[in-house]
Image (cartoon, rainbow, N blue to C red; front, side, top):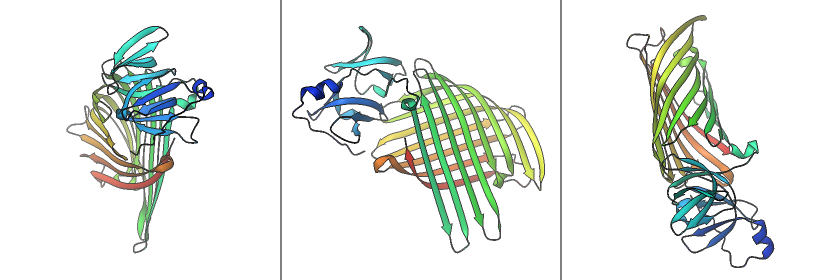
Length: 336
């Protein structure tokens, strides 16, 4: 991640009054302005001196003093709301006159300015892709989107991914997968999760599969380099299949075991991997697997390029349905 730094030598009284947060960098420079957020080892800092926000590697900051209140997450999983004040290598999290916790710069893994404004707590991204091969007249269009809303104790998210493919002398193929997710966080990196997934896939003759899940999860690692965790629980699978214009339905109970890892301290790249296994509890020896791998490369002005792999496996598919289906996507997008 490239670093933009403002070298401050002279500050007039108007600027000092207007700007409330101070960052002391390891290179001895000082930044004064507003620390808006920090996520995945990147701090977003606003000043009166620039039309755009600065993005600073969090691990290059020596100390911090803020008058802004934040939602603060530590690598232990503990969450607080308060101001930050450094004293040597120690950072105090302060609410009014009380000290809530003592920590260090490396142990702070997430900061978000507390604001009643809905939009300030929302992160979103949208990307689209189009491929065309003249030799066989293959045309493919894809769209991907993500919305995440974060508060002190909970997180809500939604993802949408759809692909249309058409080719001469071949049936049009369509694939849609989407989900809505709600996590409620406890101390020590534990959380309760509820989620609904949808999948429609002509390659596997799936008209619509709706999976409702309830479970618990825990982050094993949560740092400024990566996070890795697992979740497990119970799911209900309601699915309908379309074969030769005949709709058949099936309901089943499943357990689920999942893991997710996100590596983001690798320059402008971001690697996200999710893997979930569903052993059936009501159908003998049936097992399903969902795998997603995304590689994101950040571009200027909040644009990005994303390379994605999605794979679905079912060892007991409907008649003439495929056990395995996978797609590769390349999309260009923008994030909020």
